Image: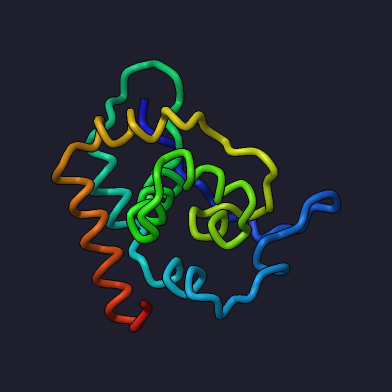
Length: 139
């Protein structure tokens, strides 16, 4: 099943904190997230899904974001998942609108996603993130 598109509502929630209201919007992960062409990555990776019935796929922005963070900081799957839970900047980078205390996936989903994407899609993901990082001069 194809992943659902995450649509930012822009709405407040009385019981949850919007990430864009509690983080520094000048932080390097925020700047990088705003510059990455997520639509390009979604189109590039979306071809690896089918329209067959099944469990809904996780959002491409979430999975691509986790992999970019993983490779950028040289982390294991487990480490990037732990970092996502405790770091609002990682959550914002991965397209979350509200802070969450729980990871919306099992760590093993990262391995399965890499296998589904294949080498070409993973390289496109890394190339896009590197191109953007160079463009905005992040290190």
